[in-house]
Image 1 (cartoon, one colour):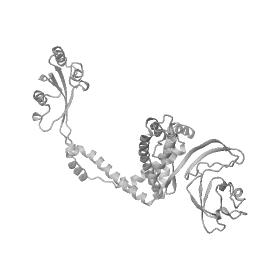
Image 2 (spheres, rainbow, N blue to C red):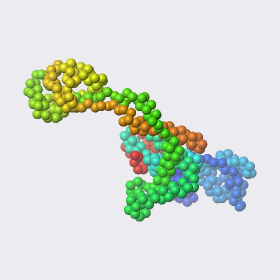
Image 3 (tube, rainbow, N blue to C red):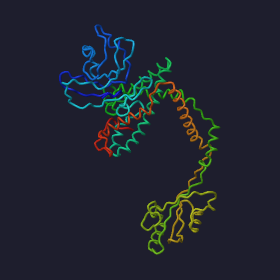
Image 4 (cartoon, helix red, strand yellow):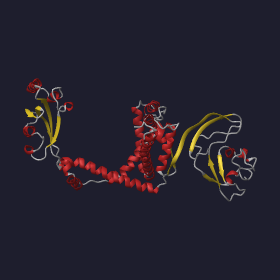
Length: 447
């Protein structure tokens, strides 16, 4: 079976066994010229190749001279003797000789999903190893495969994968642009900065390279060189964003004042009064007396409201929140006229009651009145941060789109779909429709 772009590792035993393809040897179809096959001294011109035979039908010496053709390369079309036309060859699984005996099933190693400016994107980045700014998602998807049936898991997996692919592509584009635009002085300064980071990290981890290697391996699952590369890339991305986006985002005082006027009602909401209410049935004279005695003794009103005697919202301690629109003395806070009058006049920290209500006797406690209005002076920092974040996100998106249009990037939707299919084969190996309890963890947990 020919699977372009996938790398497999298998094993065969026996004389004449064809070598298995190792990870990284397989790639997309490419055009080969007949001269590529006949370039060595003494090579014979090639005739048409029978791809179902171990050796080409018309060239008995080709399999010996070009073993790759006899072990997994599918040649599309005839191979003319002259060198004036192209031949298309596509890599695939190696063809074992009749004497070969398989000793194990092929094991999936990795898959190339696409390219960013000629740099390959591999499935292992997302499932197992992670990148500078993208945490691996393999273990996370594996855990969800135990909890969700396959149809639900597919939707969930594609959403999570899409987020990480988009972030990875964005950061790779920013990193490449930073490397391409740094001048010589900036490069020297940046490398010095990274070296200083390395020394500081090594000192924090015990002082020696060996101790740092062991610490990073145990805590983050990376080598010291990988950690250094990730720190370099992360700081490159931050530098590029700072220089090309952040520095160009400005927020003026006029911008803040205009936004305050637009959101005036948000920053000037009515005060919020927090009451607590106790209601005891009129028939329970003993409970009424006990509640009044506890109130007179200055016990916690909330604690009394949570006792068995109270029949009104006992679980929340009789909590009642009311917005005070306009003057409190005229506000409509409770439907019961006697309760409403008490709510208008009671002071913070004081209790009104007992009050006759239809359900019996009631007590009303005013816990607090929260002033929720903010003038422009007090709101300006919040507004400035909000406006700056909005403008930064828009500017970053425009900058990223401009860079992406200049670069050669594989279709991200295709990358997401390939990765989702690979993850499904890994975590639902039998294609089960229910949750897969046997799904094995893969890679460090996603954060």
